[in-house]
Amino acid sequence: MIIRRMTAQFGALDGRTLTLSNGLNVICAPNESGKSTWCAFLCAMLYGMSTAQRARGGVQPERVRYRPWSGAPMAGSVDLITPDGAITLRRWTENAARPMDAFSATFTGTDTPAPGLTAQTAGETLTGMPREVFERTVFIRQLGMRTSNDPALDRRVAAIVSSGDEDVSFIDAEKRLRTWLRARRSGKRGAIPAIQAEIDAANASLDTIRARRRAVLDADEDIAAMESELASLDERVSAARAEQRKKALNDLAAARSAVQTAEAARAAASAALTERDNALAASVFGGASYKDAARR
Image (cartoon, rainbow, N blue to C red; front, side):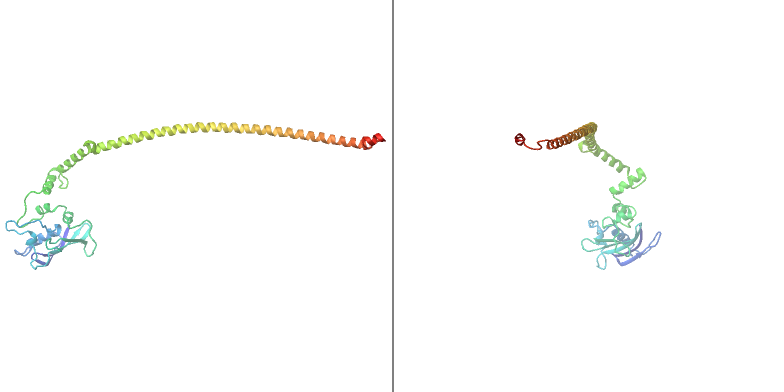
């Protein structure tokens, strides 16, 4: 994150703008010219204005100490360069009881919101540290620097000591691993018992599937045997049908021969009858009845 320009309506900064250049910027100015006010303004722009502070030892809370001298509502903007591009942060006051409670983060020169930046997360997202760590490390105040212990800062220091990386704490990692281990082994609700139960259920399902597969294989064997028997029956039926057809054809041929023989015999008988009728007609009595023949 690189700060390019800040415009503030904050304490003595009545609409003033501070433009920064690349590299280290050193501001040399007389007392009460606003150097500390600019620092407080930057912290407020990143993390918001705390409303939980109370007056202590005659020191007013920041929301009172940095109330604009002009009486205007507290507000400001900061132009930044980030890995995602140029971004402009804006905070302004909509409720006097919660100064700088309204927030926006857009790509500079546009109305397009910058992803991942909200009023609550902007500071930690841009600096990589929560407000408590920021105020106790890189943000150096002229007066009233807080040196009390803070859990987040303690974790970062312990992480650097144990692992050399402030984002990786050996204590947190070990605690997390132990928590995960307990969660996996604890009673019937742990992950390992749950997974074992799933394995048992899967094995039972697998046994059922295997039994069904054996039944299917047995059924396939029965079907194969039945198909073989059916093929044999088909062959026997085909042979029987061929034999019956052959016998029927033979019987038909014999019947036709018998019919032909009978027709020939009938024709011969009919010819003999005709011959006899002709012979009778040519005889003495011809075709006379027996009474006519007797009278003759």
